[in-house]
Length: 443
Image (tube, rainbow, N blue to C red; front, top):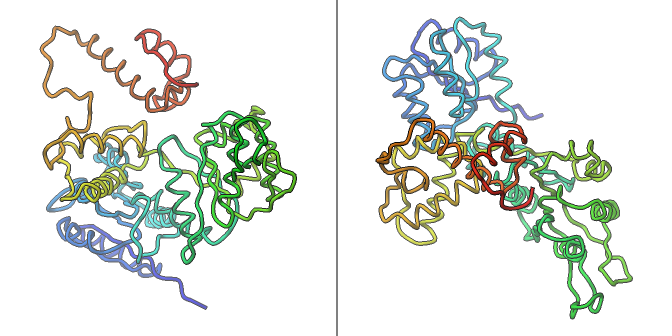
């Protein structure tokens, strides 16, 4: 029987009494602990070594725990779950660090059993240490990658949920690769919300020559195209009730018939469905079939929005800049410290997609290697405008611009934009009417 690998903890604590007590207890718990007494020692080591959890005091002799954490973020170091030890007067600072991506904090004086419980809750199936992260460095995305390892070799149906732009297709492709490491198999994706019923049926199941006007040749649908591989049905929550029935039959029987065809065709594939909608609520509202919901939701993967995993922002940004440099040639662009701070403060309503598009635009428009705030944020003024605006007028203008941007990021969907802004749908409509904001797209 194999012996479970020890968990590797990083302790950053300058108090010898507290540090000795913690290291001794960690050893009793079969944890491997590396203890640093200064922030500088940790800063030199953390980028080169991998740990499962970091436990850091906020007060350190040479630099604050916050300054150390920010320095690691700016260097895009892949960080494990980060737990802060804080005094009573540092609670606000700890809460600010949580917003920047820290996993949790514990107040002094603390019970060591409580600390061990927090560590245990943070360490859930740590990622293999010999592989670089593919999806992100935040605890949420590291846990998600571990889930992909577990289910990669199975053929169970998977449902991926999350806001628009969080990277659902990217996760689906990574899952496909985990299950097909040695063999090249097809990966086919289709957006179910982009087709009317008649066109979607043809796209899913194909059609025979002469099946309808314009069918001048036989066409294989995506179920056939993905045979032997993976089929991603994106925005499955946008399907009509009638199409849901046809999809359910195809999933249950793993058999499809082309439009105009007479002979059923067997297909063998892994089905992944994705949606930004709350399918469970749609089932309760009788907008989505309950039997189909349970068919596609054998394994559920949730991708949190980018604003809830801030550790990933700069990591993803650097990945995108490296990809951009590989396409155009030359050295990658880099971001100024001020731009990085603004990026961490931004809520990114369009999530990873918005971040990538903003960086692409900045690389096209900027002639310098260093990207500045005005390169990335279109609406950010280069200098204070010389106007006679009152404070109320300025705040109203800012609110109107921000609501317009969030609405655009959700393709004009009022309900989803309101959820991102944290206001009711009625309040959203009232503000749109007040500011003369026109809705574009479907709701």
